[in-house]
Image 1 (tube, one colour):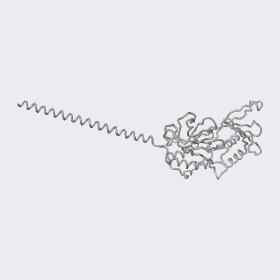
Image 2 (cartoon, helix red, strand yellow):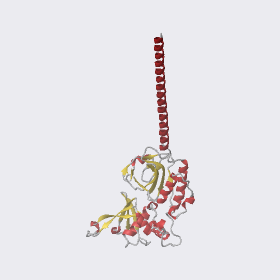
Image 3 (spheres, one colour):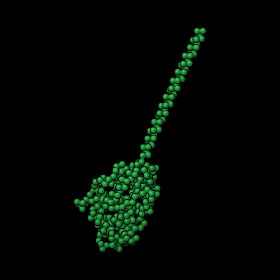
Image 4 (cartoon, helix red, strand yellow):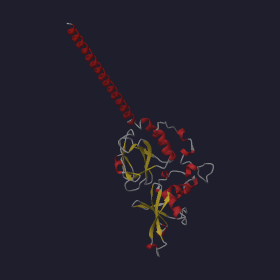
Length: 333
């Protein structure tokens, strides 16, 4: 009888241990499952935050309004009038392009790039355009594209006169600095333009013989009139011909993407040119190896437009003189 009782007690003890072990194992599994579920929840929350951070808009209505206000002030300083793309109707330029529809056709810095319109500046493109402004001068346009490249603000410009446009980053520090500020969320006001660096077209009022530092660094993009450009180029490459004489006829033509200026009836004074960014490509007759003028060939060379501006178009006196000469050009198209 005692033996049976001992066997029963032993069996009951073993059963208790087994049940206790199972309970402990069950609790451990539950704890692991709960911990795993918590880690998964935290991971998803982190991923959601990262995604939200990545998709935060670079551009909004407030920034667009600030940029529009700035451009109104800036174009007044530059004596130019820019048309803004309204987000609905394509903006047409004098070279036959319509934006933003034709953005897929253009090059950027000499190569084909992924570029397109993006309302918030964080679209699928390498260059996400958020604003477009276009100026139409005398048969030449200046088109600015305000964009985000890898999340960073950049201002591209096109001044092409033929062929497929090749957009370049603007050299105008005023445009770049203000777009950077606006993209960074800083509100624009006219008081932001107090420093001399922010007034690229302003010359020194107290000394008309020299321009201040901002004038000497004036953006070449502000000299958009081909006739103005022609005067600057001609003064540099043909210093012996006085085109300022009101009795001198100056003929101005444009053909095959090149402008041509000729003084009087002498074809030997012909100069042809076109401009890419700051680079002036010009051609003139090379008489050094030709016995007669008809035998001479056009020789190509280059100049810096910004240097010409600093040399011949920096002061108010110079600008007035150049404009007077340009107004006398005969346009024989």
